[in-house]
Image (cartoon, rainbow, N blue to C red; front, top):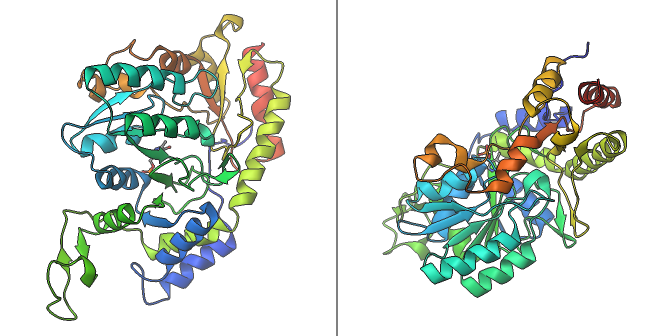
Length: 389
Ligand SMILES: *Cc1c(COP(=O)(O)O)cnc(C)c1O
């Protein structure tokens, strides 16, 4: 039998290792030159004005919400099919969270559902302060349409692009913030590029960038322009907000710079593997990922949905049998409104039926740049055996 094949895995080469060693032998392990270099690299690639490295995408989401003024009494909407961090960030700020059901083709937040929900919310005086579209699997949401709605209903937009660095929408890089206030990336090892832990917030808005810069480091500034009075001397700094220590280290940032050199290669390899899956799995009773012609997905995940009416087994049986054969399939994600914590806040099973249906059918197959042809063939052969014994 094959060795265990995970659903995602980092790609680390000698250049990455050397980049970290170089930092270890330098003067700064943190707050040195690697962090701004990484920010400049990502900002250049994504064509955003500003990019702020932080210690995780979760932190990036938190300071993005705060920068947009999310607080007590506010409402934030996101997709129920995402990692819990996309919603938790609003709760950290004391706001309330609600969800918009998904599109049954892309599994992203549905613009149709968003439109209906906004109309109702307007009548009830419960419009969201911020909407957080999540680019599930790396494929952009319909950002132009969401942006138009934001103009009409006056809400801010944070793109949770944790899955999507290297992807494009309407031929612009995801992260350009063309249709959003802020976009955030994750650099967790399963994501497209990694810094071990790490995240980034991108924006074209100077005020938001300044606010997030303060928030990521204790709310402290050394910039005389931001101080309430003239500096006491060279040692002086002022705390002007309540911030956090959400900084990225130079070790991580150096790895990030090194990984950025291979970003396009990573994404095109993911596309090559996905295309191969599409061909090899075409005859099976499963729904393959649908890719929108306007967008080039980062392809963080390759999610299939079982056509359960044509399969003799349950979703769980299929999942377990694949795991028993050493294939690290996964499920992205459990609908957030079905998490006990969120049910404690008043959300209920049945609230978002498309998300729940997706949860009953979805399986993420292994997809990462170093997945070999032999491993991919093994995944395909095993899936065929499991579905058509
Ligand atoms: C991974 C992920 C996050 C959180 O990223 P961290 O860097 O681990 O904090 C947030 N949202 C989505 C959609 C993710 O996949």
